[in-house]
Length: 468
Image (cartoon, rainbow, N blue to C red; front, side, top):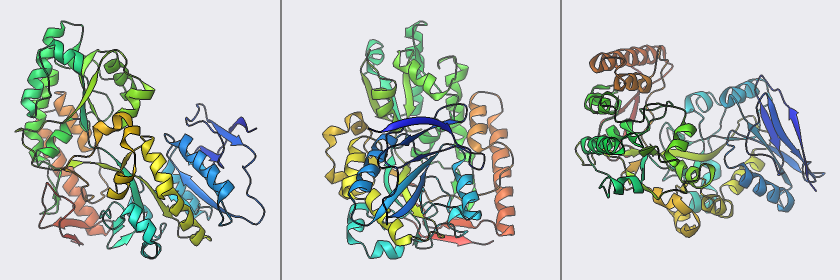
């Protein structure tokens, strides 16, 4: 029988949950308390090598801890995985641990920027391990999914992604659309806005056409409408930031607010999800995580809901829709158990581990091999978010030391009518490029140029880094 206890853990002013294959809660608790489970398998057997693994992922903890427990009981490699979930300030925790000589062996690398964790030597390249492991290559297709600036730098692969989150989709209330005379989502942004306006009018206060969250509002619809219209904030050909293309998107988006189309409040994401689930508005937009949210977390039971592609300016697809890469692991360069650490990564990214993970709907498969292995009848509504032909990964623009609000905040302020669109764009072009020039001059970043850049296939071009 396993038991649980609640304890407060303070480590470099951040909170962590240590798990060794035991039944811990997947949610962090409040007021500095965390759940730490102790059980029969919480200690390494005599003679085993303990591999310390840190991650910031909590949404998949139920599955991961079950598989860790299974590995700890059954592996023949003499390895014991000790998994720690960092609930706050993950990147700084890792950097502090590395500098203090207490870093783990393996780290979840989903969100780790290369300039901080690879260029500085904290993470080590995995090429030699990958090249000697044909099974790993078959299952994960690491070289097909080596993304410059994301997990790869100058041919060195620092971590390999197992999955991805889809780009943004439109989730819609089929009942409301049908009641208002609509059967599909328009492919043109102006028509989409007109439909939302008509729904709000016909709703007569019972429901609205669309709802927006207060959290990164621009990113969840209008920025993605811009992407599929061939508009992006970094000019890869000329190696500079350019927000000029967003003007038409912002001006159209203003209609949602100025014409009282949108639900008259912008709350946190979960609150707005709940309002959508209650039928308070017809249109919502977010990525594939909504499959689980509207099935388990905030289940929709009162109406049928559909999933559609985001509209573009003209109704044509002229650019790639950005996906979010997920579930990757790296080895810390100071690890004294690098070979054992690689065996742990082999397990986390094995066909056995990934099949159950993907079929549980935690993310979409990134490799064509795993896409062909999983039973798609088990993934539920995640199937509605299957990747589109024009979804891709964009090469990461230069990391800069920006002063002031980022572009998503500024452009949404323009949508809300708080600032003039032209002034907002001018401000962004000035601040972003001044920061880029200063950082290139200081040597803290390099200018990224792709002379043969194709907006529909952004990751296919020839990448050059310039130091001036």
